[in-house]
Image (cartoon, rainbow, N blue to C red; front, side, top):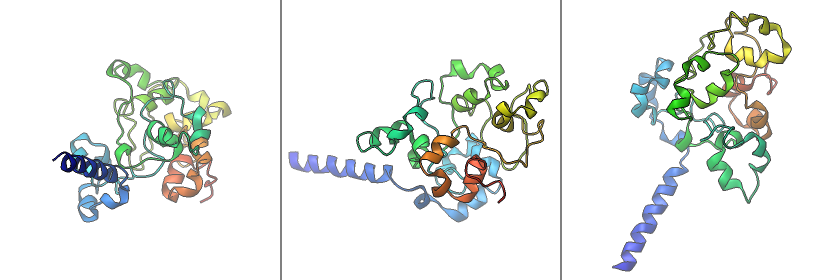
Length: 228
């Protein structure tokens, strides 16, 4: 009986681990997904979350780089540890703690656009709408701050874009203003990096391993896709 119990435990463990490394692409139900998510904005609607788990590819949430790290860089600085992504010693740790930085996203950490910080941090909505805190709040409070990707819409995410309009032409703020104030700065069709993680992603092959659409959407400038 003891041996049988041990075998059951082993095969249960094995099954769970097979599922945990299952590739996103194998989970899609294409016809159903295309119908449910014909409106791409439904991908970030919480009421569609149960169906989303079968449609990660359709919703563009299955790329190896575009999930979120479990903790913000202020807690665990994955960007500073990027050289360890390919380390044999630290590979397992980096995949678990820094999947986005290392390009190791899978079905378990797909980019479902959620808050990483606790509610006390994310409830400070005024910081969501400030250029100064845009990147930090986007990383830690994506859902609360309404940073979930929207299909092809050119908008200002920060509310003080008009007041900060002079930064639109400031080279030091070029990437930030693209992300936060695209409409005010008239940068909707320009070539820029939409993600602040492009440097670390490039170091791990994002510019060659990800699909061209994802590459252009997140890191057009870094991946030299401006003319394509």
